[in-house]
Image (tube, rainbow, N blue to C red; front, top):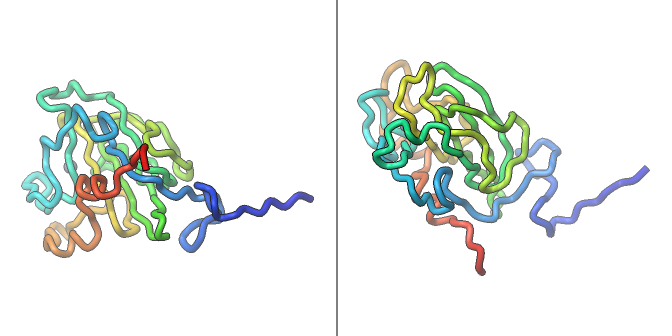
Amino acid sequence: MIVLLLSGCGPMESSGPGGKGSLFPIVDGFDFPVGGPDGQGWDITGYGFLEWSSVSNSWHPGEDWNIPLAGNGDLGEPVYAIAHGEVVFSGWNTALGNVILVKHRLPDDTYVWSQYAHLDRRDVRTGELVQRRQQIGTVGRGPNNRFAAHLHFEIRSADLPANAWPRTNGTAWEKERVAQYWLNPSEFIWQNRYHTKQ
Ligand SMILES: [Zn+2]
């Protein structure tokens, strides 16, 4: 019988609290989910973070990314994992269409979750480990082509269901309450960018 002992010095470490016994990667930094690693070629032309959305009657908990002026021309464009992590949900729901939720372990042993919604295609399954910049799906139009093609993208500081939305029984949560569970995605990524040079 062979027993492998894993030291904690590599980029992979056996999981601590919150893990499930599998190897859980630690992030080495974050990239943007569409376009170049810095999001080049794309912009938030739809709802931004904590903008009031009259469509959903709520404070928008993420960012809507598009290729500016592309219309549906960004349909089928690649969507990338923003950092190493584990896919904790990959599936369909009626509000968001195809949605992927990835859990990320930070070097200080805290976690954030990235959520990618309205996807045309999902390329990863629940339970899979993903690498930063790995393609996990493609940009889509949401359930029944409800939207013009765009990526709805969230970063959460809390373990919420993939389809969580800051609204209860039709009533929008207060902005301050939303900010307790959701982070400003672009701000977070810029503050935690992956750097190729030390
Ligand atoms: Zn959105």
